[in-house]
Amino acid sequence: MKANQQLVQLLVETGVKMVVAEIQARNSAPLADLSTQTVLSTLTTMNIESAEALIAAGEAQG
Amino acid sequence: MVAEAQSVKEWPLRFRSILVLLVIGALAVSCTGTPRPSAHPAAPYVQALAEANHLYAATLTAAGQAHARGILTNSQIEQVRVAGQGVEAALRASKVVLGVWISTGAQSDKAALVLQLGEVERLLANLIALKGNAQ
Image (cartoon, rainbow over all chains, first blue to last red; front, side, top):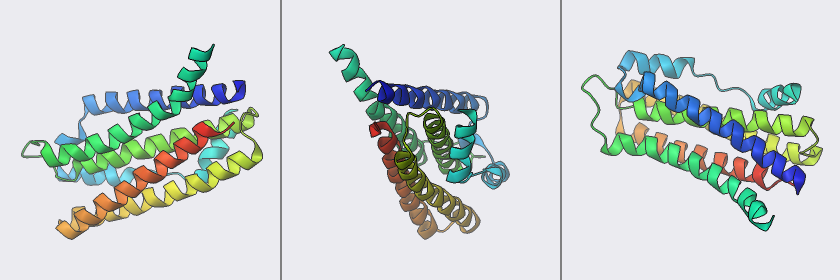
């Protein structure tokens, strides 16, 4: 049970940080207001990392 | 103690709710919002995809950390890995479909995008639930 609590807490903390970062980024430059060129640029530069690499990165951070 | 345990049990549900609200909210903006004349109609979808991508990355990185700390077993991290690969494929497919829609502007491509983003949301929610339920 204790291990499960630690995992849940870790997930929540990480997730909340990401959501906050997204909200802050959105406030400074709302994508909904961007032009075609900027939207295309945002999509082109969007990096979707592999699941394998992300898990390995987390394991390295420990 | 019981109340604390109950509160902890609710966290995966709350986390999942945040995810669902983010994706649905971004999609809803495209249907009901009144974007400025310079705004591109695909912008809310790009935003939804970016947010889903961030949540995907954060979830898997946290899973890796949990595995390194012995919180997740080898069997559990393998389950998460498989689920994560499903989300990865759905995200990549969404990116392609989104690019096609931006290029063509066709309603059929937009409809395909909405379906694909729905698949991303479903798989991502399953991934987060899988991790939240791990013991």
